[in-house]
Length: 239
Ligand code: ATP
Figure 1 (cartoon, rainbow, N blue to C red):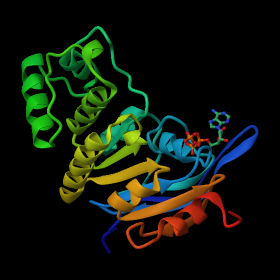
Figure 2 (figure 1 turned 120 degrees about the horizontal axis):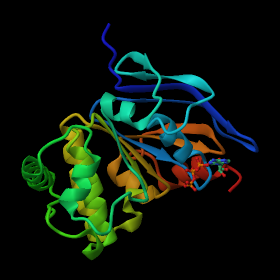
Figure 3 (figure 1 turned 60 degrees about the vertical axis):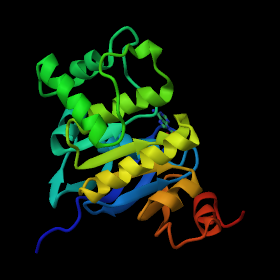
């Protein structure tokens, strides 16, 4: 009678004054599964991610985490559960080094020396090497994203949420990131991969929830579906 899913969402809804951004969304993610949330701009992807990371509260619906019903009231609690989030816009300080930036955000306080070793070790292990001594302002967007990812991985997440992570990357850097994501998944970390890029999702993801206008239009195995089928779910059968 063991719950095989890491995360189960049941009928999650969230309204803003003019729009129902999430309308009874249900989905399930297993340990080690790379699950896509696929949808166009305005489909409700960011709203759902903010609910999962405790930034906003749903109006209705429930979240089951490892078989237990939870209320995720703030990001610190999300992190405590083991949920990590890579946002599209990074919250990093320009005038600090990589190490100082990571140190400032750690819930669990390491000494700077210990943390430097952890950053070197973790970044190398996941194929995203970074130099802890570099100043942020000298780094490209792709390198900054690496800092965000390593900072998240230091907390050993069980579920990593990535919001359009490839929008700032070169094609070569995308392949490096996908390798890291596959490595994480092979170690049992679940991934929620938010994107509207069909080719990437078909390359990377084991399963997908497709959203349109706040509603689920379908669940799919993106590796078995044609781009056309996925696009029809995403955009609407009228197109
Ligand atoms: P994008 O890729 O553009 O971020 P999305 O799929 O993430 O799109 P959401 O950002 O979740 O979509 O937005 C869903 C709908 O809710 C949109 O119509 C958006 O305008 C609306 N919305 C989002 N946040 C708010 C808010 N704070 N107040 C009012 N309406 C909002």
